[in-house]
Each structure stands twice: as structure tokens, then as C-alpha cells.
Image 1 (tube, rainbow, N blue to C red):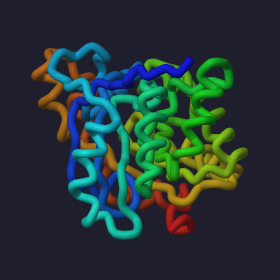
Image 2: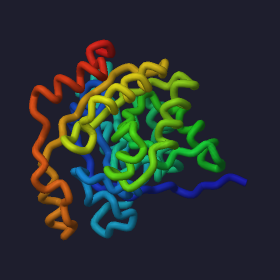
Image 3: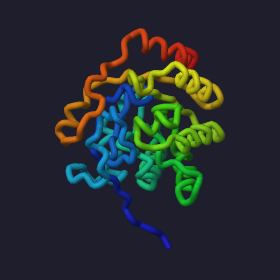
Length: 252
């Protein structure tokens, strides 16, 4: 029997001309919901899966909106789905990307990998999604599991396993690391992360993203205490150091 149910997801917002979340000019969809609680998150307003201010949308509605900008995408651009955590909406994401690929649209997921598991039913769904996904931007917050827990409130074992699996199936990824003084800027951890990245066969780019304080106002609006108060962005020397250890130039 055919299931004609229309899949939807709660959309926090969209960005028409994104230039920092994947190759080329991209239409970015920010989905609602995330289980991580990163101390420096600049979108804490996307955490709540049941946020009443988000808009319920289906794949056709998003594509209709996105395709208005297709002429700007050229050869490299397309659609990036971010969040929140897009993998929490895996059925919807598969529907969206399947339809996007039929239209020749480049597809990209910006994820922290937290929902990943090799257990069913997620694993089969993930494999189907990968058939329609061109690229993943994978945030590795910290290679050290204890420090990862401090930053996000969760373990990183399944996130690193996701990275390994994507290498196994040769699915292209960009690895991103947010550099936060006192939290994710340790030479020994950066070296371990570099070694981990070197063990993967599918990494097309490595990015160091310096911590910034531009999202603090959202925490205050939501009345959530901001625990990194007083932590300044890393200086140019530490950013250069991270880029050197992570060998980002080798992936350009």
C-alpha cells in the first residue's frame, strides 16, 4: 500500500544567499531542534523541537522557495540544510533531497552528527539519505570525549563513528572545528584531531571556525545563562596555530 503522507519539518528560518555553508552560493534551511547544548551555540533558538514560532513546511514548499535563486548558484551552489540538527528530521530530509536531486540541485547537510547510530531504523534511513546527499559539513567540536561532554553535554563516540562510516562509503565531507579558548583550543587535542582526520579518505576541506560572541543576545532573549561570558575570540596567532596543526592548507 502506498503511503501518501506529506512529510514536514519545522523550519526556523532560511537564508537566500549563504556563502559560508558549503560550496558556492547556497539556499540554507535552518531546521528546528537539537539535542546538543553547545556552550557557544549561536542558534540556541533552534534547540526546541516544538518551538511555536517556527514554520511547518514540506519539501515542495521549500524547493519552490529555494529555486527562485537557482540562477545565482552556478555550477557549485545549491541547498544546504542546517539547524538545529537536520538529522533529527531524517525522513523529511530524504524526501527533500530526493526531490532536489531530480531537479539537478546540489545537496549539503550541515550536521554535528549527534543522532548517528548504526542501529536500526536510523541506519537504513541514513544510507538512503546518503544516496541523495552530495556533501556533509561535519562539526567535530572536540576530539577529547571528556572535553566534548563539557562543551556539548554529550559524548562524541557516535559522532566519530559517523565520520569513519562516511569515509567507508566515500561520501565527501568538510570537517569543521570551532576554536574556543579554554574549551577546544589545546595543541594535544588539535594534534589528535589532525591524526583522526588524516585516517579518513573522504575529507575535501578542513575549516577552523574562530569562536565569536555574536549570538550572545539570543541567549539573553531566551533567558538562558551564557556560561562563556568573558571568553574572548581566539587571537590570530592561535587561529593560525590551529590551521597549521590541522593542516587546513592541504585540503584546499
